[in-house]
Image (cartoon, rainbow, N blue to C red):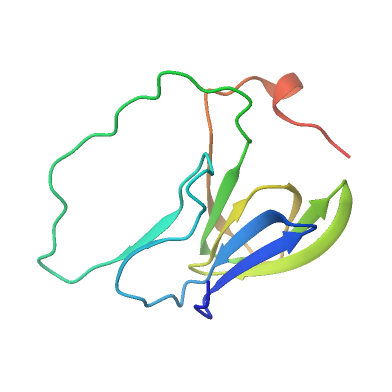
Length: 135
């Protein structure tokens, strides 16, 4: 990802997170996640009059041991996301209006301003006791 508005954060060969800044302006489809990731993150920058043919996405027949990932999109406000590798804080990323991050690791979120944030993660929801491991 040579685009200055995209940042891959890695540790020991593991992709921990992908940051997409709101200033991304590259026209067309910009899919930034590796094809094997369970959450596929893309940003589409299209011109007026463009269209996508009517379609639907087909269900997966079977999934096993799928990595649990999450996308945070900052509509407004400001946060700091601490990324963890091997349960140790590895890096802190600051996100502002229009920024988003695809998380593939442990993380902590601090709200630096009043914030409207959209979260996307896999379902179905497994329940509080099963969904997270705190450290």
